[in-house]
Figure 1 (cartoon, chains in turn yellow, purple):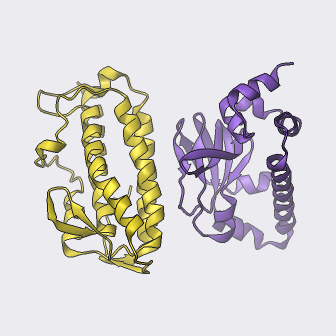
Figure 2: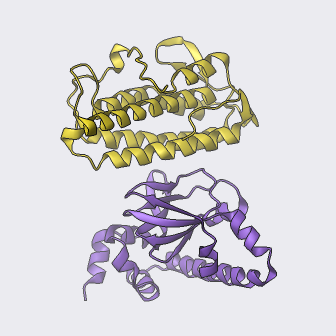
Figure 3: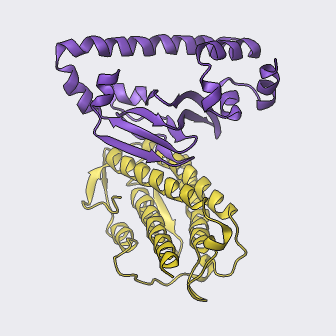
Length: 192
Length: 168
């Protein structure tokens, strides 16, 4: 699975195609998770590490923040399609920092996005998939606006705004990161 | 059709409810269903509308994207675990460089056009009973391969209505 955009300038349409493809794969991975039982989905390696459902709930919390904002900004934008998308310096940095490295590198999780110990069940997976369907819709809608000019506030600071194109990539890379974490959890369980 | 399928050098397995294609993507592949079943649908204001099915020994393709190379709004989703052989547009174009092969291709396309016309009449038929009978006559196998609720959606009726119509 392609994990990052290597070049800073690209065709907007190519970016959207890539993001659509990544989202499709994300949905398919999530569908596979539905086959596991609740015990597997709530298994934790230790007290502070996350279970599979906690990883997904964390992603749902981010989705709750970003998706409505993106939808709103796209709907109310008066900008039009631009052929090229140029990644912003900050946007590019955030996107890349979300990529999972081979070594498990821990990142701080902000308190309001921490799912630990919430009461979780399989509906978490359904919610996650619904968010991805929504994301597909937004990606399609974003064809009609300027991915460079529409700006989205990030969750940790309302003073920092990223270009819509960068936000999509950053948001999706973050999901991919946690899906890899889920793969590792399943592997650990198998080898336990 | 067998010759076209034999061009394939790739097989993919799609799990139940997983997507082969999502809205907005470009997909110029032709898929031959070895096992399982798929549906092609569009989302109309968050309501799913199934427009076509593919099951064992069928060809499935996002025809708009295949012919134009442009993005298509169609979703292709596995109804149950499905294995397909993939034939790329490039493989077909190469195959069609040989003039002798073009006739086969034209026959396939002609067949698809006729199917589309039948479908158009399906949709414009008012009576649910008639819509059901048209499809039953044309594709009895469908009722073995695909669950009722999807067929009901395809026929643009409720699952209850379809159950009623199926009673002898």
